[in-house]
Image 1 (cartoon, helix red, strand yellow):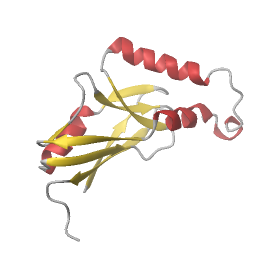
Image 2: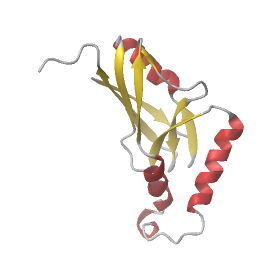
Image 3: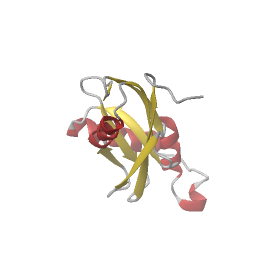
Image 4: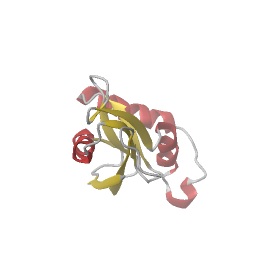
Length: 138
C-alpha cells in the first residue's frame, strides 16, 4: 500500500517537519504492526530523522553547506546543483520505521523531515507501508 503528499519548499536548503502527515497516513491505514518506508523520489532532496529544535535545524543546514564548500564540481557546468545531489545521496532519500499498535516507532526526539537541498521546489513524499499482521494474499 502507499500514499503520497506534496510539500512546497521556500529556500534552497530547508528542513520541513513532515511527521504529522506521515503519522496521519499510518493512522488512516489501520495497520496494527508492520513497516513504513518514507521516501522522496528526488535526487536533490532527502529524508532525515532528527529533533525539531530551531538551533539544531540551523546546525544541520550549516553542516550541509560546509560539507560541500570548496569543491569545483563538474556537474555544476550543467545546472549548478552538484552540492544538492551529493548531499541527497549522503543523507538518503528514504527511511524505514517500524509500526506498532498503529503508530510509528520513533525515539522521543525523533521527527521526520523532508530535507530540501535545491529549492524552492514542490516535492513529493511517498509513504509505503507493509502490514505484518495481515500480509497480502499470495
